[in-house]
Amino acid sequence: LREIISKVKDSHATQGKASDSPAPSIESTIFELQASTKLLSEVLNDFTAALDTIDNLPEEQEAQTEQYIDTSVDLIDEAQRLAMELEKA
Image (cartoon, rainbow, N blue to C red; front, side, top):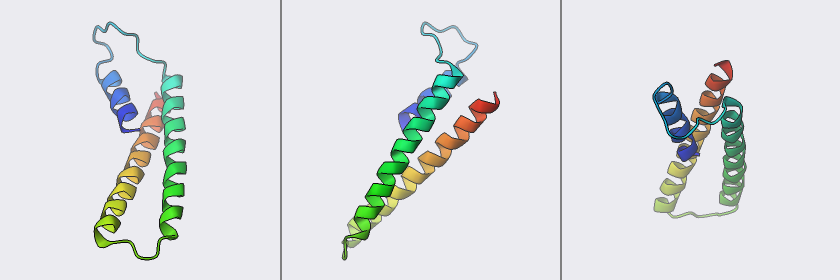
């Protein structure tokens, strides 16, 4: 999802400049963002459900999982904001 977000931002930052490759349509970009966001959300839900079944997670692993979850949620939020911005365009 991070790569898709970067690709979309780069694509729109260079819009108007000469480019060898055609820019993807806004609709396909929105679809890609939404599909990837949905997939990450589902994986994150499965991951947190699996974590709930573990009784004593070592402190280091707990910190790593919290960081993973926070990063995933931030990516989901960013992708949703970007999709909404593209829909308005």
